[in-house]
Image (cartoon, rainbow, N blue to C red):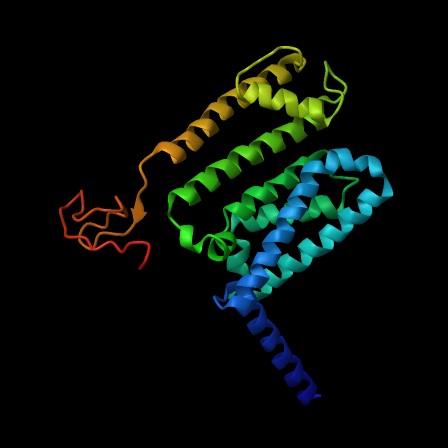
Length: 265
């Protein structure tokens, strides 16, 4: 009996070590594994975006839905087991977002009207350490990272808002399908305002105002990431200033001599 328990514990330790290697290792096999996970995640996000249209497929849609739930559940369980302290892992807001997305997959009949929030998976992926450790390590703290993060926020907002409009206002004033909801969202977000598709009542007006204000903010953030002079993260040893110009020789805050490595090392 004791030997069986010891063997089981050893097997658990080996599994945890293997998962830590795959999810946190820097060797090529671990990186390839994480790239595969990211590719699957992007396919899942594509399914989430197309879900309102694919629902017309009937039972086949729910089969795919539950298969994705199984994949996501296995991924979350593996990440939790690979983490040193599961309680610390559960304190991360991104984890709770992923758990909520999993709940919408497991209970599609009860949480159907909240299904559009699944697209938040795109934001959690592109803003996770897991993503930047894998495909973005060379772009960490660069203009590329800033642009990708800003763009992920904009794209996520567009499709989450489209899903909300579709779920809430379907059948009202020109919202006859998902494409109409997307058209309204983009037209309002860009403040184009053609007026051929509008939302009824005070809720519709308030939502339109929120979309316009959020759109301005998100576009400004993206423009700032595209135009703002690039900075590199290199803390000053004297004053602690975190970012500097790539070619800086002295800290602009205290004048301390800097030695910022270039891209080659």
